[in-house]
Image 1 (cartoon, rainbow, N blue to C red):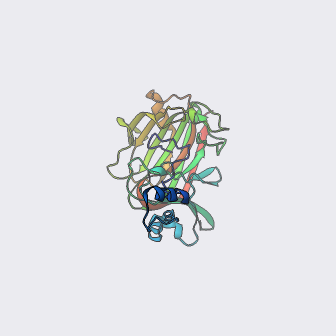
Image 2 (image 1 turned 90 degrees about the horizontal axis):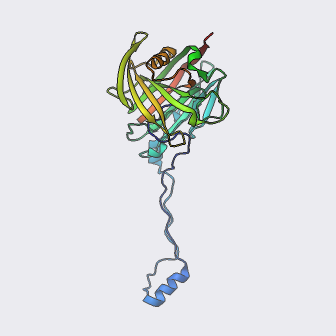
Image 3 (image 1 turned 180 degrees about the vertical axis):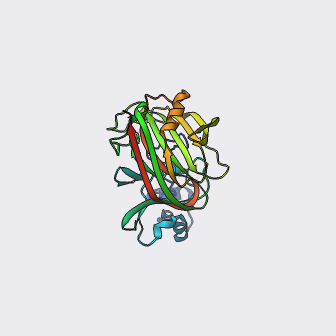
Length: 315
């Protein structure tokens, strides 16, 4: 999952501020005050005004509702970081930057029946615009370093021991505002995946597939190259995010062809190119492969029609 800012996505994010409560003075203090100063008959009522309700008015609640949560036959889970497993693929409702919300919002993992099978996806409504994103609803394959365990015995795997790493996907998306579909891979210096360990993160590789026109990734553009007939721009940030120890990790953004909502991506050649450029050591480990939407504002829904990751070890 790409972390758009240095906010750590392994901690609970700030709740929206609630309206203040009125302070009530005890009755005896009012009496003392009146004795010393004199009071008119309109002394403040002993019962203070009721605190403002924390409930959204109906029109605001309706505005916050993500578009697909009201559909017939659709179930939803709108809790931050809640996870729905479908085999080794874990759908996570990642609202890592909900503290930046500019108004009432909603983001959920959704499910429905399609051709006799359960189809999963996500839906969202984020008012305003945040260039670094509000959330990243996603599919996780492998060990996200904030997780207790890997979703598959295939990962983590040392880069030098990967013969092929193939991702096949197909999604349908309808949305307003700005959102980007991307693949994310966390790279660590450890293969141990039995407990959360974000301090093992050394790098993150993000590949944009479908993104707003004229959008630029995080970081500085440092190279343009071609792999397997596809041209990419490399955008680099030397210290990104927070592992929990005050340090970040290297972030590599690859901006390739746009409007790719369906396809098969060979990821090993991209890892190999970074290694040959001495940007990524091949004794590091690919911990996770993820697919999700980076949400910068607006509302929409993504349904996942196909998702599959195949890891072929060397030898």
